[in-house]
Image 1 (cartoon, helix red, strand yellow):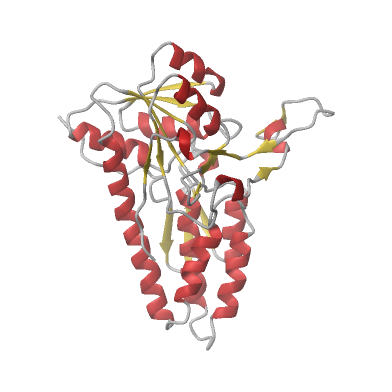
Image 2 (cartoon, one colour; image 1 turned 135 degrees about the vertical axis):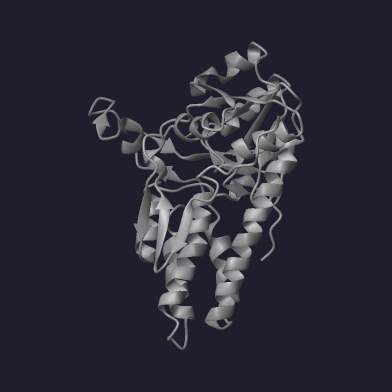
Length: 318
């Protein structure tokens, strides 16, 4: 019997309540389901920079932050200077994510009355929710009954939703999830949300992908993307590119759950974020490497379109 569709807490990880936002702290999962209270745009920026929220969560936080600012500044005759200040702060948080695209969307609506601007943002968020569900449903059609699907990092609640839609169509899927170092989003987030819904999930080290493909244990790969260039190249969590190369070598289909295309013409035009080396050299405050060792941690890499079997697009309109 097919499971009823349920949403992971990661699917919609920002809640607007009263004069505050509540943001799911992804760094505490799976041990603790805890929401950070956010009262202003600077706290939103901090939550994004510190990876408290990521993937779709940070996109949601951008729009909800604008709502917060608009509601607190309704008496201002001209909101644009405030909104531009907020936009620049959000854009500066993480360079690889297409925040400029998102903030320009809101600024393009900002000539309207505050109430109309609010309705536009809320309408966009409702559209985003519906389109994410449709994206998961479309992705579920790509797999056969009994397939084992490899995924890397975390796509904010879409993986259990894909499994749910597949189950409703009479298809059982199992998942192999990379640890996704150094933040372990695969082991902590994706494995957690799949296991809590009862789907088969196996965690592997990031450097095990070639071996499990060689053993014939992978039927398909599906990953997300933080940035889609106009030519189909994507930027996603570091390690995605090498998985795509392996999938090509072993003739395993490689699917990508994409956001709308942003400003970049090709992958070469995407600025790749380099995170602080301490995030690689330490884990939860404990030093893993010798003090004299240096670290290099690009958070993303670029996978060229030629390695992608199919883009599953998120069709949203401004």
